[in-house]
Image 1 (cartoon, helix red, strand yellow):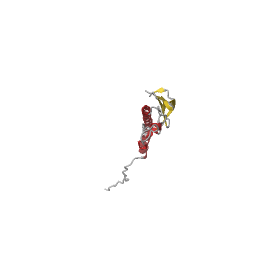
Image 2 (cartoon, rainbow, N blue to C red):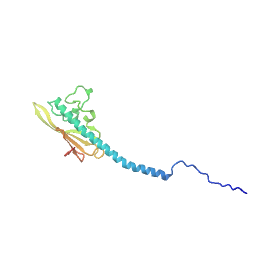
Image 3 (cartoon, rainbow, N blue to C red):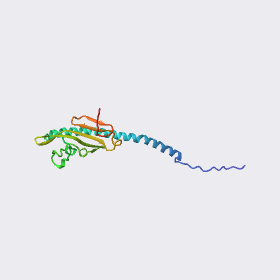
Image 4 (cartoon, one colour):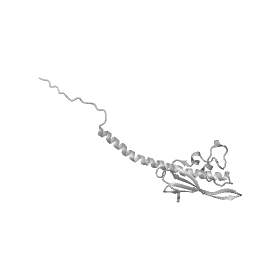
Length: 172
C-alpha cells in the first residue's frame, strides 16, 4: 500500500482586514462625521449667541455704573471708555475699568460689539450722553452666530434674525 501524501497549499494567517471591510468602516465614519460636524457648529454658534446676550447685559450694567461714577458725562459712548486696565492707573472717564479687555475691545466669542446712537445734551457747558444703544453682531453670520442683538439704556435686549442691527424681535 502506498501512502498517499496530500499536499495542501500553505495557509497564510492573515490577521488584517480586507479592502472591503476597510472601505465599509471608512464610509461609516464619514457618514457619522457629516452628521456630527454641522451639529457641533450649531452648538458653537448657539453658545456664542448666549455669550453675546450676557455680554450686552454686562455692558448695560457697566453703563449704569459709569453714569453713577461720572454723572457729568452721563453714559459712555464707547466701549474703550468703559474698559481700561488697572495697570494704567486709577479709573477715569476715559477708562473706567468696568469691562474686561476683550469686551472693551469690541470682540468676544465670535461677536463684534459696539456702542452707537448716543444722544447728548449740554448741561452747564458739559456734554452729557443721555442715551445709547449697544449692538452685538456675528463676525461671520451663520458660522459664529445667527442673530444680531441690540440693547438700549432701558436694558431691553432685542434681536435681528438676519444677523444685523435692525433689532425688532424681543428675546425671551
